[in-house]
Length: 367
Image 1 (cartoon, rainbow, N blue to C red):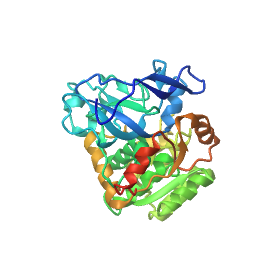
Image 2 (cartoon, rainbow, N blue to C red):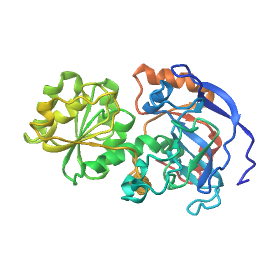
Image 3 (cartoon, helix red, strand yellow):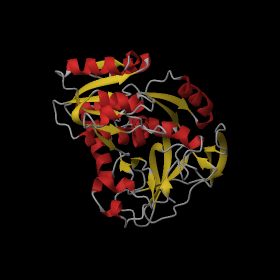
Image 4 (tube, one colour):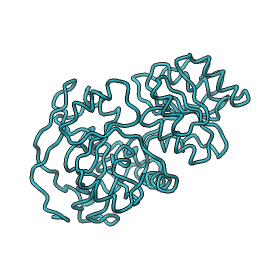
């Protein structure tokens, strides 16, 4: 039963039809289906760019499906083989549910475990997600929260944080080297600026919105570049800053059609461009790719160990998440309106259970 009486029914925000508004429905509370599963009482759920892709049918999700793959809360029940968690633990929910455990990625390098293609699915995409009062997730991909990290931060970190953290790791850069983040003023970008600075990197932030440029500067980028002035202008500015070489590596988290080409243009010869954004097609002129020997590296969320290291970094360095909170699952229409306005700074989140927010303040959660 867990630490509290778990109800049979709950409220959940669901995709019922593709390209239609979300619906708030009463549904069954998830049951613990596997020995390594967790049942989490959701404190905060976050909106991600991927949610719009789910809503438009990009992933062919089986409907209805509860939205959001970014969530954090308190464990209220555990599977019979769970060893690393207990009821009452505060956690950042894992995205992959029920990996096979036997494929090359599952048994291969630890930092590739999230790539299992034989798993049941990702929560909020293929199976029910976090925009609900309770969510079922897999203990193997879920991360225990340090007492310093709040639910408000942890929910958007579940995907946005994990994704940009691994993207920075994939650059392979050392302290003192230059990283350029294209799309630096969004939900992932403002985290990437802070993570990169915490790792000792010098940061160039590129964005195409006034709000994004402001957020980039606010979170400590060494240089801020306005993408609206064009690729050539941005590349020249970056080369001037870096003594004519270009950034040692770049990360593209903007799905604008020209963003990947821009990221390559500002990267030094033989450098790595990490592609995280997911436009339908990644378009790069051959002159950037071939003549300058730019290496393109795709990256997807985090492995379990990488997730733990990310949260340790936040607890130690005070990385903050810019959030736009909405109180209650019934506020999704207003959240979507803000996201679609293009005026948002950071991440839009829903406070599902305000009591958990009050309780964690007594624990000393400050980031």
